[in-house]
Image (tube, rainbow, N blue to C red; front, side, top):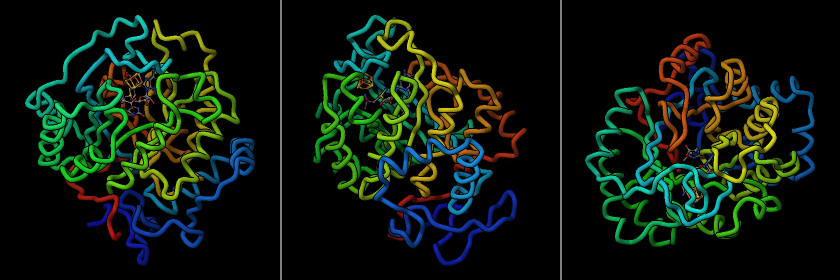
Length: 359
Ligand code: SAM
Ligand code: DTB
Ligand code: SF4
């Protein structure tokens, strides 16, 4: 099976919206110079991309995007918090950390039937991917049976599955992979240099170790970060360098704009210019041409025009539905209207795809 509208690397696939050929593959071809995918980006090169005039950067990102994807399609993913609040980690941006008073109460892991009901609703609403998040440092072995049932149940609906449960051991990653989990989300969040300003309860290396376990298990890697936390442009470049120099790029790269939640230490941080956020998306697209770049948290505070520029910069996935994990997201009708105005179509639930096709 191959990703709908993705080519086999030999024959240009057709862009179903515009009829324009789409050249390139997702995950099928090796990452090397010949297909325009590089893993040896330097900080200076990445910084130079950030420093381009805005129009030049967007032109470059759009050109790269069109080589690998249908430029008029955006994936819709639905998030569900399957275990909310009370997290022992101290991530300064997070409303679910038990270290901060944010009004988010600690809840137990949802039961499998309740998760399935939400997944069916998401599918009916046009989501092709269902992402389940838990406010854990790492999953407890006693929770794994329920987690596996959730993966298998959601997959049986024909949706792509993603989970984000914190740090994973090699054995836990292998178990999730065996159950058929398609993607595991674990963000590096920021650059190695800035990381210590944001989280103290686990290290950057801990994150990389989990990502390695996920990669080794055969699951697709979903890994990105947050901007607008008071970091510098060099820090943003450093974060993208970590991702773009991994031996294999994450198949999915969520770029979140910090959602400032009252009670978290990052509330009151100077707002990042949305054009700088769009630059970050564009640089991610240039560096990681075959990855889904996900316009993640922060859309509620963005204008339609800013989001349109994110899509032009190469973002091709969003979270849909009125809620992310605990914070707000645009209304479904508003997103549908924006897609209509832009002539963007979502990837269909029925369109079968496998990111590892051809491997
Ligand atoms: N506990 C797990 C973990 O941290 O890996 C999974 C859930 S955690 C909420 C998933 C990601 O959401 C974080 O890594 C972070 O990038 C993002 N996130 C959390 N709070 C956010 C906020 N206020 N604004 C933007 N992104 C946020
Ligand atoms: C990601 O990078 N962003 C999503 C998803 N992965 C799990 C989460 C955003 C959370 C925003 C804050 C909240 O709603 O609690
Ligand atoms: Fe916990 Fe994840 Fe929030 Fe950090 S980001 S406090 S690990 S839920």
